[in-house]
Structure formats: structure tokens, C-alpha cells
Image 1 (cartoon, one colour):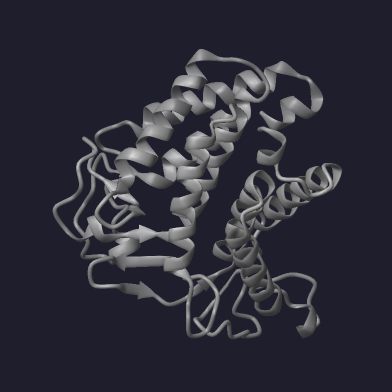
Image 2 (cartoon, one colour):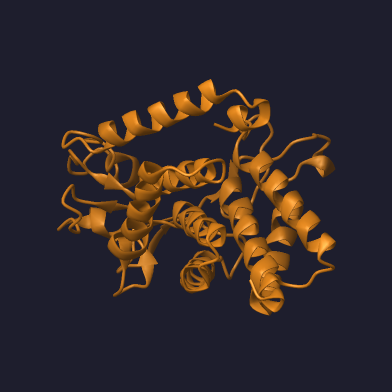
Length: 280
């Protein structure tokens, strides 16, 4: 759909729409994702046929929102509406104030440890996708609610000992975390926080952006080691081990770069005045 936007060739937009609808049908199957829980809780995790994964709704929301920026489409609008409701009302847990990762096929919470999993990296992405959808229609209430949830997830995931953001809480009630650090979990909040700064000028978002950006530049970029790229993942202390990082991130990093540059360009054009102060 982005290729269609760049070239003006509607065939690719129609193809993207067809693929999106097919994915929705597949993901809605009552047999979908039977082994998903093992990726979080290990090989002994219960099977999860028909599982609802928050990560999926996050992706549907982003794609459909982007497509709606190109043309009106009632089916896509219904998908966006469903995704917003699912993320903000079904996956959001009022008791913990967190967006969980998995629900049963009927959207109830699993009666086992799967209900305790919060993937903070995915939740932070999902919340800025909600903010992007709200920005498209200037829905400030929806934007502010997502921004409030975003700040809670960042505060929860921040490592007060070694800095940086942790990616996965495998048991919220017992406060059990995997202590590795992933690069995408450092850059996705930068997209989200700059969105908040652009729209509201919130000083807390500025502070968090500076803290996370400083950590990310100091610990994941490898210029000081003589390499032009970055670590994709590391341990809690952000230790660099030569030859260990064999995967080069090709999605989150350039997306963060391009989206944040575009946001900064808009802010510079408005001389830094937040959108809210201009009545948006």
C-alpha cells in the first residue's frame, strides 16, 4: 500500500487490501496460534488454539490507519474501530493498568499464566498506533488516554539499575521479567514520545525522550566499536559481544528514523509550537 502511494498504481493498494482481509480471516480462526504461548512461557506452556494476540491487532490497526490516509473505505474504518476497541478495552487490564499480550478466542482472560504476560515492546508500539489513529481524526480524548497508558508502560519497563527498557514481563503479579534488552524496545518509545511532544508539548514526554535516546545512542550504536550499525539485542547491562549479533534489524530502526525525522520537520515548520496550542 505504501508502494501504491509512492507510484500512484492502484493495483498495489488493492492487493494490499486483499492481503489484509485474508490475514484477518486467518487470524480469526479458532485453530490459529496453538503454540504461541511457548514463545513466552517455554515448551511446557499450554496450547492456545484460537488465541487472540495483541501484537496482531496492533499490526492490523497500523496498516488500516495508513490505508485510510490514502482513501476513504468503510471496511477499513470498521477494522480500525474494532482494533481500537480490542486494544484499549479488551487487552487493557483495568486491575494492572497494562495492555496484556494474549486473550482466549472469546476475548476472556486465560485462567493460567498466559494471562500474566505483558510484552512491553509490543504494548508501547500498539499504544502509539492508537495515538496515530486518534491523530488522523483529531480525537484528543483517545490520544490522551493512549498517551497516559504509554507513560505507565515506559515507567514500568525502565530498568532503574542499569537504565534502558526491558521487553517482557512473563508474570505481572509475581513481577518476573526477562532481563535482556532489545533495540526495538528502545526506539519504538522514541516514536511514541515525539508524537506526544509534537501534539501536546508535555514536559514528561520530553524528559523520557531524552533519557531513552541517550541510553540508546550510548549502548546500542556501534560506532565506538568500529561498526556502522547497532546491536539488535543484548543482556541487561548492554554488553557488546563480537560475533553474537548476527541479525541486523531492518524494520524498527529505519521506521523510527524516518518517522521521527518527519515529526521533527513538522515541528520545525511550526517553530516548535505544539498542535494543541494551535487548536488541534
